[in-house]
Picture (cartoon, rainbow, N blue to C red):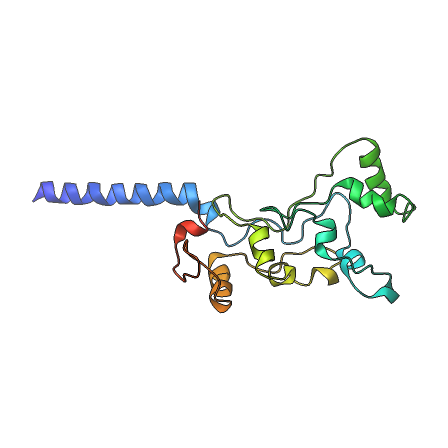
Amino acid sequence: MNILKILAGLAALCAACVVGFLLFVYGPFMTPTFGDPAPAQPIPFPHNRHAGANAAAGELGLPCAFCHVFVEQSEQAGAPPLQLCMTCHVGLGLDKPGVQKLVEHVNNNEPIEWVRVHQLRHFIRFTHKRHVKAGVQCQDCHGAVEQMAVLTRVAPLQMGWCLTCHRQKEAELGVSPGSMTEDCWFCHR
């Protein structure tokens, strides 16, 4: 009888250790999103000025893919190359501190260390290219960026949120074309 109590105690201790270890290792990745939803950027970038369509307010109405040139060919949309910014800013806004900082980075051949706003966990396989080709609008995941002076994460980017969208759009969730299976490895590495 004592041996059964000892074995039960050891089993409980082992289970507690395994759970504790898993929470220690994976706990940070189980949070819905991470980081500030609207982090300060090294240079203020008003998306509403660039992507908004109110010409009377000085908005340019540029499509997302004009600046995020990799969105249709890559997993990540990426920040635009600084030379693309200079296409317009070689003569525009040179009196503004943000544009002056941009010019300084270009002249010194230094990249701008943008702080990511929309970031998925390392074990998630996501490709912008696939979603853009399927007709998903940028605003579906990123919100009304064209109205944001400060880029802000508005969607939770959680598994349940993604699955709900896929189910509503009857999007593929498995490995065979047209299947509605929910194969974990389709999104998780």
